[in-house]
Length: 322
Image (cartoon, rainbow, N blue to C red; front, side):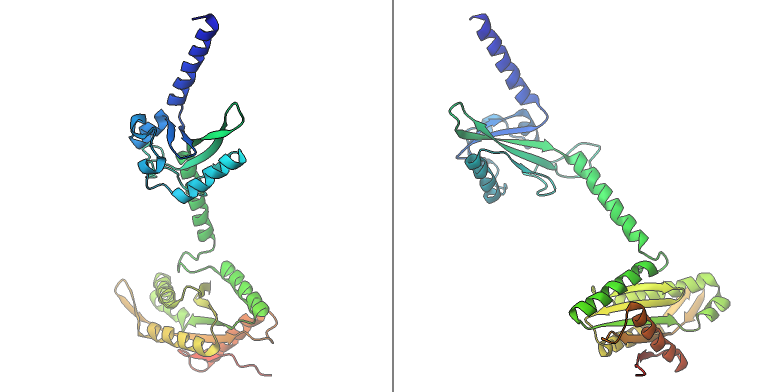
């Protein structure tokens, strides 16, 4: 064997060794999806040696693969002779491999990025493609953890800690958006404002800790009565607001009376104390004469004030004086 042939043979062995030991998956397929190469990464994570996979149809060995999707992607690479890519955000994985790294042990499956690349022969034709599978579980896990932390921080920034309702700032933003939606689409919507009757007396008689428990209990009952589309918030102190989308004043009255009666029937227990409370509520249905969301809020407040003036523990609907 001449020296050049020996060098070429050595380089070939190096290449084979690299393909087998590289820390990415490498699968070579022909146009019939017959496996021509199955490297060490794929053997290690699938549990199948090359002898069990090579010269067999890929989908026979892995029937759980998304066949229609993969066939379309691979055939496009054959036809266009260009690479195609898949990220874990588009599809978490191509091959469902278990993941055992201790740093990202919370993830049961390996997240993968995949490159499908054409293997162009010396005559310029593409008779084979290579699937290159990258383990990106650590990156994906960190990314998901960061997104979860950011979502939790965002939720905390708009949540009232005592009641777990929306805080005033975020709730008013929602009120503004609902008012804009009303003006744009002429949808029906109502606003409810309510507060706890004689709350100062509760604080003076039982203490502020008991007062906080009263507020928490009212908030709990409010949350139980909200639909998914309703937006409840703590407006301040013992006052609450509720945005009822696609709801007229009459339906809002039914909501308010149901909530009012539940609160009236409830006994707030704090330590050995049993505290009875009531609430007064005001309703304003948005109409074309309402000049802005602050005016809408003032109308609901006026209806609430009318409930207070009328003897408390009741609901009033705003009536325009014009």
